[in-house]
Image (cartoon, rainbow, N blue to C red; front, side, top):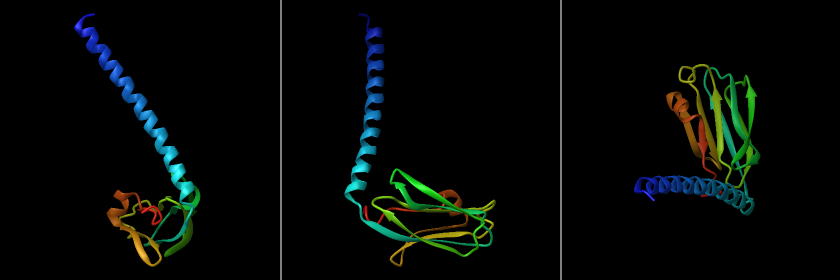
Length: 141
């Protein structure tokens, strides 16, 4: 067999192996998260807050779904300041996103607190670039 053919076969084999490993790892990580979620069935409460001059809607993890696919709830045309306490489970992250036509110009701030401790806070341009406030589960850490 020619050297160039062997090299091509090695490259194809390596690419296939990488693809299979990536797929297997993705499947394992989904299963691992599900197992951790089942093992860590402890719940925790967080309070979401949004302040500012004008917000069109607020999206947040409301506690449904699972860690990999949390249910996102939406409140349209909320009155500011807005506040909501939710119960989350296991390693599900807390997340809140106030949505406005110009979040930086509307003076929006979002905050996530747990037992009086601020887990995440963003405002103005930081809010835009970070995609709202997202906090790791205090149960998972």
